[in-house]
Length: 137
Image (cartoon, rainbow, N blue to C red; front, side, top):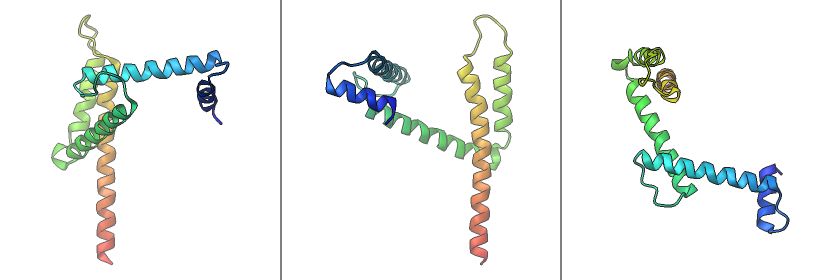
């Protein structure tokens, strides 16, 4: 049994809840609340109160959006996109101008998307090769 499962049992039992269990519950609530706020501010309709099932749906939507963008940009006509994304990330990293800083999470996002596109291309080629091998038999 994990420490978090133990904490949940303590919270459910209502008897002598440890400070660790209360801290874990507080951290979890703060995390869910911050995700709810961030996603709501980004335009996702999550309702008024934080709800983990709604957050899960948003994460699924975001994963689908990323996969769709990666698949689209993995097309041969966009061959230069990963290099362009890395160039943009590098330019953002090296601005050095006060007030023009780009958050590191965005810079990392450019690099991560470039890697994701390249991995998607490899997967597409592997799938194509597999299909061709199966149809050649």
